[in-house]
Image (cartoon, rainbow, N blue to C red; front, side, top):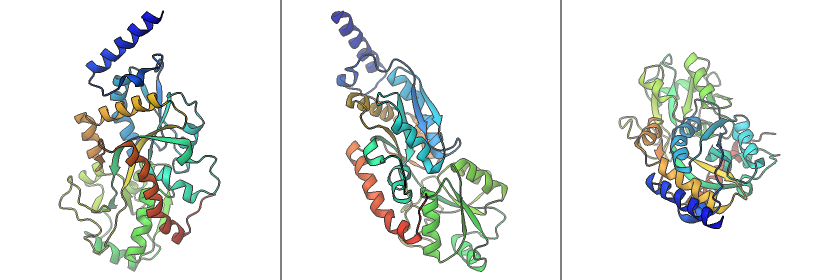
Amino acid sequence: MATTTAINRWRRLGLLALLGSTLAAPALANDKWPDRPIRLIVNFAPGGAADVMGRAISPTMSQVLGQSVVVDNKPGANGNIGIGETVRAPKDGYTLLLSSGGGISINPLIYGKLPFNPEKDLIPVAAVARVHVFLETSPSLPVSNVQDFVKYLQAHPGKLSYGSPGPGSSPHLAGEMFKRAAKVDAIHVPYKGAGPALTDVLSGQLQYWFDPGPGLKQVEAGKLKLLAIGSPHRSPLYPKVPTLAESGLPGFDADTLFGVYAPAGTPAPVVEAVRASVLKALEQKNVVDVIQGLGATPEPRMSRQDFVDHHAKERARFAPLIKEIGLKVD
């Protein structure tokens, strides 16, 4: 029996090597894992950046791990529904989470009664991409640049609405940063994901939003007007589109990091195996194309420690803004 187990173990290692994975032998110490499909919870609605990324990386993850990795959308409460389900799942490697960094680092600052602590109850496994936000407006607005848009907002205080994937999401915080930097007033409308928000921008129910990527195809189709990017640097996809800092709002930076997480207590070898599968996915040209098509930047070289440290930096960066605007959700 012991000999058979050892042979099976080395057969699996050989298969993984042929697939080009970077898994180490300790990751397969339990040769029964995985022996059934793995669920990758995406804590936002279909059509948003997290959903698109999850569906892009899951095929390679499935190939490397030898079992299907199935995306399961659990939207709501700015990602808290999906986070909570992940935290409550068995710590066996069969439930993972793909979330925006805001869901992990910002939600504890704005929700007073969370039944979990993301910092303690989740393990950051691997960064996937740095997501940028793009200021887009309805084509019906008589504006062609940020300066025109600011003047229009100032002339119509409290009359325009913008959407976001939820309270405390990077598009929401970008909208609040923008309002303060530009000295304008507008109404925030939260949704359960970027997809539903985009739908209402396209229908005209919202006049603008800070797009985390899914709306860029609509920009190319002429259905949305792209005014600026809310990042420190211009996007390689749109080199002629200025940053908000270049447009008169110095220091504007609303980038966030999306990544894969596991419930705390998941065995270390399993965590390393999942990490290796994500990194392998980020080597694939089709995955890179999908991520860059969202206007995002893949993050295959970020170490696990840097990924862990990133959350503390995000809390420190956004805590003053959250306190200033009195953002609290019960």
